[in-house]
Amino acid sequence: MTIFKMTKQAMTLYVTMVSSIVLIFGCKREPNQTTSIKKKPNIVLILTDDQGWGDLSFNGNENLNTPHIDRIAKNGVSFENFYVQPVCSPTRAELLTGRHYTRLGVYSTSEGGERINLEETTLADILKKEGYQTAAYGKWHNGMQAPYHPNARGFDDFYGFASGHWGNYFSPMLEHNGKIVEGQGFLVDDLTNKGLDFISKNRDQPFFLYLPYNTPHSPMQVPDQYWNKFENKTLPTSFRSSKEEDVNFTKAALAMVENIDHNVGRVLQQLKNLQLEENTIVIFLSDNGPNNWRWNGGMKGKKGAVDEGGVRTPFFMQWKNTLPAGKIVNEIASAIDILPTVTDLIASKNTTAKPVDGKSLKPLLLETDAEWTLRLIYNHWSGKTSVRSQKYRLDPDDQLFNIEKDRAQTKDISSSFPNIRDSLILLKKQWLKETNANQEITDNRYFTLGDPEFEYTHIPARDGTPHGNIRRSNRWPNDSYFTNWTSEKDSISWDVNVIADGEFEVDLYYTLASENVGVSITLQNGQNKLDAELTKAHNPAPFGMENDRIERAESYVKDFKKTTLGEISLKEGKRSLILKASHIRGTAAMDVRLLVFRRL
Image (cartoon, rainbow, N blue to C red; front, side, top):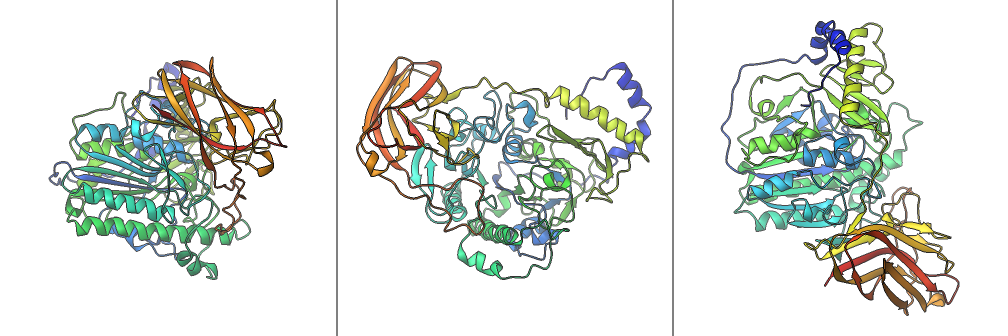
């Protein structure tokens, strides 16, 4: 837990509020009852994307059935008050590092702002040093190019996509350790298949399997067998305001969650079949609140909000015959607690390079009534900050709510408890200052290219800047491509940092109308350049809408064609990488999705 230095004035105020602070933090204590710890248990960490606290039958949602996820809670420990951040990248960064995301270089969900600073230590780094085999299958969203790539952050094997969202969930273009591959079937099923294979191959040695699933994040795509159950179903429970809820969106999200549940069941069954249940810690949570207004236990807020509904998530831990079955923990906890908890449970001797902000939850997991120190949890996004104590939440407008009685945050009790409100305001200001949370962001980190430890570097449209007439296919960059290249004066640039000198083969993923075949292009970095000509047409229509259950906000995708442009020599250093169309024979140049550099 972070310790703050207080001014004399602040200390005086704080001292006068001692009795109020006790009310803020209060938590019960019971006698100790410890359980012996097995050595080096396996770790399976399952993270879902945009699934709300309420999207489980375990939490009282009558609209769906999630028996396998519920079983993790019933066979293990569930946390009633577990909190993450309001959006994807910050939560992922916190659970991987045990530190507040505002310290980590993470400030956005795209275009480089999602990257974890290189001096940070991840859970995978630690477990790898402990002799674990490590794998991540799914949505990474904490840096695309090495050394920000998952393979450079402690994961031996990575399969999925490093961007923030993906445009197609049925056999999409993915990567496997940097190499572009085609997915096999519905993405969550495919990711689970990879996880099952990983478990089987490593059954005789400790392993860490990170499964950051991509659903129920939009686009709202799900196989027919799940959608058919919900398409014409009348939902028993709904959001408190029917005018705000898009019921079809809700149905699609719930269908996607039932698919997740099916796949979680497959993982649990694999562990059982291989007799690994008793030596595997299984963790389940979501990365933020629900991505539309739907039933969520009556809480205020959804994804993106720092209120209860935007940041409260299910959090279940199962370790058969070690953690007590069916235990419910009421003490507040957070994603920053995952790293210190796991390392404590396995008695790791390895530490992070920087002090963690989280706390080990081991006492709450293993002891009947743990000694537990006072704490606060901070939720922050887009300039808004709220503070959660054991009993209260101070919202971003400095209103105070008794969350034990009022999860919906309907009654501001500031006037009745001004000392508590003022104390939390003071502590919030200290946290913002100490973690630089409200500091204006100036990101001087270029996109890295050519790390000598890794064969491939992806330079996507997402990270580029269009010039002239060129436009993105969509205002959300993560899965977009560049189009409307109509002039030889147009160009695309990327600010890149070439990590080390080298020779690289360059592949371009593009589409091009037949009447525009013969466009001449130049790729340049400093004094070095590569000239090529596109001689083959490839102009498929955008797709994705045929699998969408709800009209999407993000870009549709294309079947982009790979062509090898040739080889280029790159010199170490920071400079612009520029793609130009030196001669356009027709009315337009190509649409551009991705450049892939392979070190020779």
